[in-house]
View (cartoon, rainbow, N blue to C red):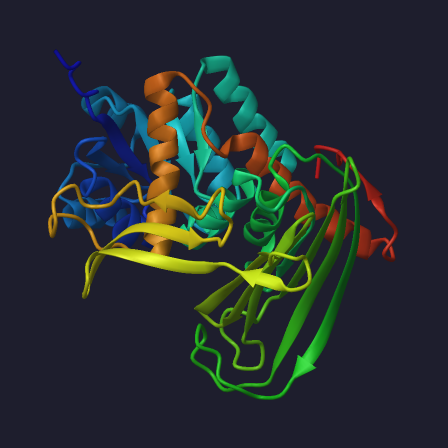
Length: 383
């Protein structure tokens, strides 16, 4: 006789940021076997009730009352950008397992307070760092884990994502257990010609801030980080790439905006030419539908196919969500927390990794402010 399925965990959304309504609410409601949305919390009655009405659940401005009356297990913290650390700590201190927005906190001392409060209460903390959880990235990580590439020596974020997002993608290729020991950074500002900004909907002249970082890891691995703050919405900065150089091959994401292609290669038989890996998106129907899996056709006779299955693929054709890659990534973060709570295990990414990604960005900026002198890690937690 099969054991009964776990009872869905009860979820409250803590905060009324835009993603609470258009992203987190619908994601939770689309996963009824894993989670159940029971309430929302906001600082003001107007914003809380607007969100509650939109999602069809009770709204509160008093977190203690919300917990007494609706008994959530998990709090998804989705607030204004600079309130992440403050509200995240409040949710943990209220006794909730939490999925926190990025960054975990802007200050390392705030991140440390969240981690300490969770450890003291035996609570799980996951962070919605979804960039490395998107399907293409998950397939590349599966390929690296297969051993086909051997050891990854050098990893790049080249406008593939800002700040901690780009750092997490870069670190994922090296392995999240690789320990960074030193950072050298350079930050420069440059004037740009007038052009359209999609986010601001303006055609003004702009200034860009470029951030460049060289990260040295224990054991000799290298991480290289490049970013410009206009990369998401400037036709002057269309490039998107993340890369890795490995013992037995390499991988390059070639992208214009959101349209990206993967160029992954091993050695061809004879060792004189690259053998390119073919990446396939497998859909539930021949004409589309939901994503079922990502496959890499390697050309290697011992491991001809490496596969990543979408954990949110429809169990019955036509009866599942046709999520785009970013939604799959965020849902994967939520599922990581659910699994950790139900199995008393650790989340796949977690608070410590999120803190480290933020620490590395702060270290790049600190090194730049100190004339490009290398900065040893770890940083002082008061930053």
